[in-house]
Length: 122
Image (cartoon, rainbow, N blue to C red; front, side, top):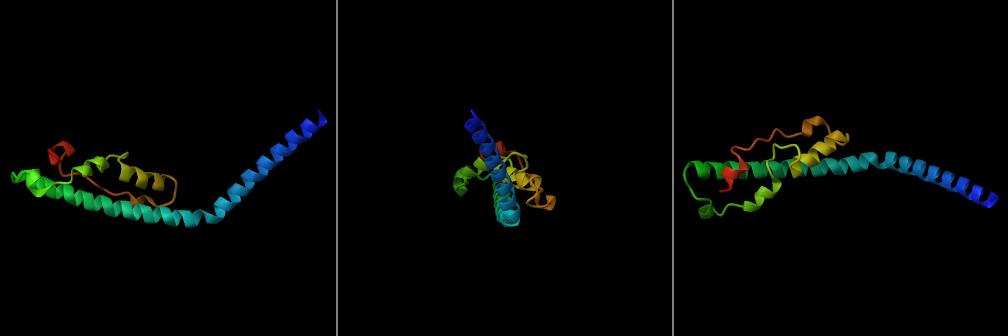
């Protein structure tokens, strides 16, 4: 019984030491990880801007009556959803990075689709 009590105590102390070690390692390397997150956020913003420009072009073509099939529209853009929605893949990534303090709120894009996705990809 005494051995079991000692093992339980040692186990708790080991877990406590592991948690403390993890906190120290994370604190030392947090800025490095935040830098990687910022790189991903910048890339996501750039991709979102490019996708928004493609949506703008598709909307222009729609408004002048050009059929999407004639300019080979990229239907896979629909996978990114409405960029203005908070839980679209790109905006979700950026929002989480802001929420967790890796980047400032100034990194949140002000994306707005020129028309609903249903109209852009008929």
